[in-house]
Image 1 (tube, helix red, strand yellow):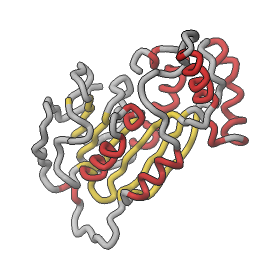
Image 2 (cartoon, rainbow, N blue to C red):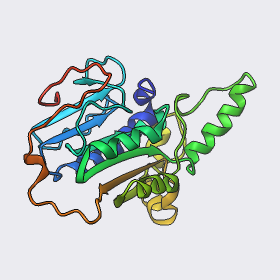
Image 3 (tube, helix red, strand yellow):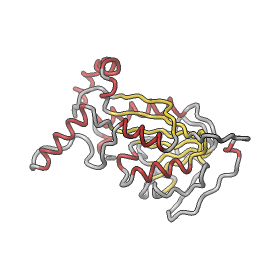
Image 4 (cartoon, rainbow, N blue to C red):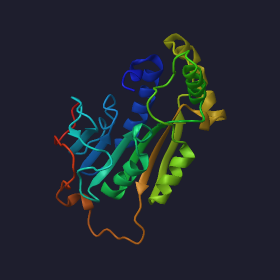
Length: 243
């Protein structure tokens, strides 16, 4: 998937997601933030929390933490913000990853999720390309790795885990072109798509808040000292995310 993000459609998608992430995280306050995966995109760049980690499941020079996403080395209720840019669709067990995110997030903490939309024109081209690819011809438009997770399906998962949706939007309405020139020519479709067929954007973007019903916080949870939970992972920590 890393190579795909250097292609014209990949750069177009990444630019839209970076703008959404910057807007979503700039005013989220607390002490501890974590991004799981997609190290090409520093989604925490606009956030001002003093402790920010970029995590990867494999060694990566851009990551400050190497860990299994289904067994995070953080105590329960200890993080204020977790970003999942295409993390769930690339995960071998997206349910386990999302459950683990719910565990480590403190009450009223936020999870931010980006995912490819299976109802989009991009997804339709990918399904057609997969069929041709199996028959021995053609190439895939989107990365071969990962599986689409639908927007409504993901909303159900979040609701069952006690999350309340705060922000939901779709983006990237230009057709599935591999050419940078053709993508540029189709820029006029952004406004039309957002107005007339909003749920068919190539990507969706969600912000959800962890709610704990019946719980009263007597003091800000982020004032408690940070504790790293025991987990069978390899860890290299840093107090700040690299620029």
